[in-house]
Length: 420
Image (cartoon, rainbow, N blue to C red):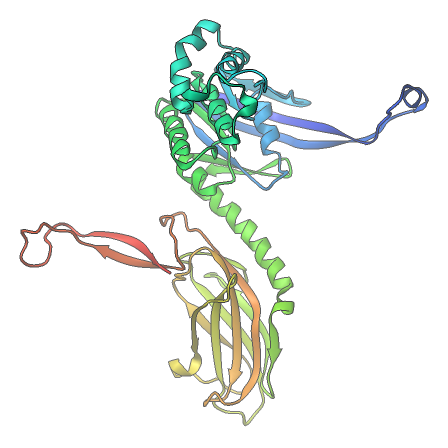
């Protein structure tokens, strides 16, 4: 077994929530008991973090992510369970903790450094590097109460990152300052990672977790829902979140869509199926998708056609559509089903709305139309690059020198691209 930097065994942590507090001495004396309840933010957390691992913690707001980080950083003490931490910790939980608004930037560097366990000589040795990293040298002799929020965050991060940690605990504090400063932050984090330091971070930026972390933990209501490779955990988390979103949107889709038609043919059910034939509301880019319409067409109504249209949910931009007549398929009378199959779904992340219609061969009579009444969601495919636009397309790049008189001779680079 690899050396463990952090080990949690059945860790529980609660907060006391008061419904009624005693505000006077008389109330405290006469009150039999304060009315409160225990809220368990962590419920039996079992987690092992190997030395040198970068692990991301994801989950919805209120799932216990920050509480877990503060517990790992020993800012909070667990109510139950066992926590073992091996190594010097540098917590980046709340930037500027310990800063005094009346003190200058320089004075706060020494104050914050001492709170992080650094001797004055150590801070003096690192002071120039801290100021250079923060990039606010001209403002170090004025009180930090006069700093902008960006300047404040820059200095706080520079102080916190100056510590030479064996374990770095980071809670959603890397999106500070402008883009250039954020790049400096990430470069420093990457340096620590390359040096074999253990990094535990919370971030709502899932691409960051997927790119930076080797492992991820998904917390749900104070419990560990899943631990594994970052790409797999992020994909499963997205599937769950988007599935719930799709269900909520579909539940309210009737107020946004409509149904109309003169009959007598009817659509009795519409389903969105995955490659296993199971009904679902979520897909990854590249997955197979089937839209299945169950219908009831009375005898004598021959040459009935089914049409499908897919639009982007946010702005109802038309994405694609076909009808069965284009494929030479008409629907037999009676009760039956018709499938519209997409073997490789090219759509990128987003919510999509479906229109399904039954009409005659000339498209002059609408028998039944479900307009924008059904939804599905597409989320990122971990095996594909992070892309922009609306659809994923496979492309080919070629490059050559100006000396080539025919087609470029350099090796072709096959890659993925997008079109919007």
